[in-house]
Image (cartoon, rainbow, N blue to C red; front, side, top):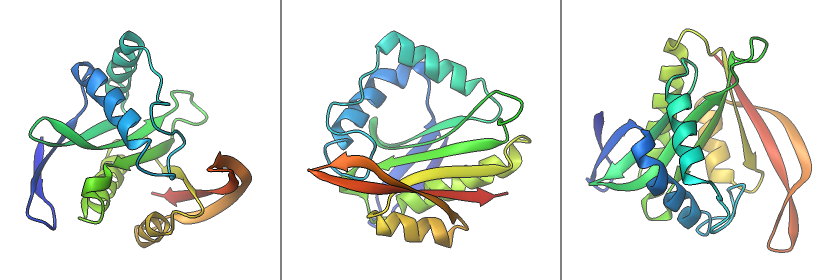
Amino acid sequence: MKKIILKNNIEVTVRRATKDDAQNMIDFYNAVGGETDFLSFGANEFKRDLREYEDYITATSNEQNSIMLLALIDSEIISIATINSSQKERTKHVGTLGIVVSKTYTGLGLGKILMNGLIEWAKQNGVTKKISLVTNETNTVAIELYKKLGFEVEGLLKKDNFINGNFNNTIIMGLLL
């Protein structure tokens, strides 16, 4: 568990997720899905069976090359940051990064702090050699942050998602460790 202070002087606790967080995580994802067009799902589209999600969190927490972090104010989740990795020998060195910050807390430095924490964790876990991520090409603020942290554009998936009546491209980015 780690305490951080945001740009607005609010204290946030960052800790690993446990299976007891499953319902709150599902609820968080379903809420933030309606706050932005930059996620792969919309409001209430994060459909997960509670028991299966609890098992997923437990399994992930036992993997040397995967991590799920929660950022909380009191007991309220304001961000989830993850690196998920395959357990297959050929691809277990690549972690897929995902980060979601509640709209209320964007622009306060939380995303950058969590990204740096995930990158440092990946460098030290003994398995991960590359971090990959995907983002909507219109998510320019995030793309600039990723580039500042060393990520490079590796590809473009054309018309990869359909949001508000428009097709959008997805940018694939990677960071070699």
